[in-house]
Length: 139
Image (tube, rainbow, N blue to C red; front, side, top):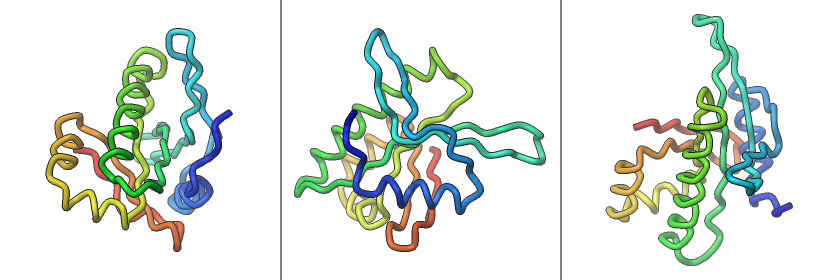
């Protein structure tokens, strides 16, 4: 199994602080004979609707010097997982978890912002120090 991302535990704690129940760590998404481990699966009861909201979260640490290269790898994984979920678990949404400091850098690279918008990537921005979710972006 692949090693957990540097911020895996911080994102897990942030989700739990936000009222999510972690249901999978990891969630295995089997696509055409390949078993992909998506970092976290979570559910949250939406009281007003009396139903659960289900998500998967792929945590990305962006540890290399090249943010664009890390971004492209993360985007490719995200898109594969999104396609798989359409077939296997269509009620579940996928989010890409990105550290707040890295997201601030991504905002200064127009082509990466265009890619997020074009592919309607759902992003969870988190603060690794406080283990808190700063924003949910769902354009």
